[in-house]
Image 1: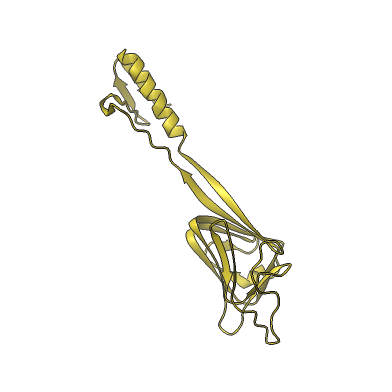
Image 2: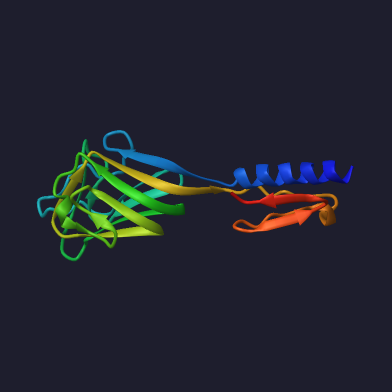
Length: 175
C-alpha cells in the first residue's frame, strides 16, 4: 500500500511540475482599427497626447496620431516619448510596416529588426523625429503556476535533479 501511495504522489508531483507553464500573450495594436483620438497635426506639427488601451496594455505618446490609418508619433518641442505599459511584464514589442524607426531609441531596441526585447512593466522609447507604423505587437509574459496541496504532507516524496533519492524501497534517479 505504501508503494502505491508513493507512486501516486510521484505521479502527482510530475503532473504538477509539468503544469508550471510559461506561455506568451500577444496584444496587437492595428492602426485604423485600434484607435486613439488624434487624427491630424495642427499647422505647427503638434498633435497632442494620445493613447490606445487594449487587453491590459496601454500605448501612449505625448505627441501622436493614434486614430489615423498609420500610427504616428513625432518630436515636438520637448515632447518626445512613446510608452507601452501593461499589467503583466512586457517581454517583446515589434513594430510592423514601420517608417523612421531609427528615430526610436530604448535600451533593448533594435531598429534593424524593429523589435524591443527585455522584461518590464513599462517600456519608454525616446522619439527623435517622425515615426510611423501600421501595427505594434506587444508580447506579455504569462506565468501559470499550479499549486498542489496534499492531505498528508508527510507522505509526499521528492526527487532532486542531478541526484539520486531513495524512499520506500524505490530508487529515483534524474536522467
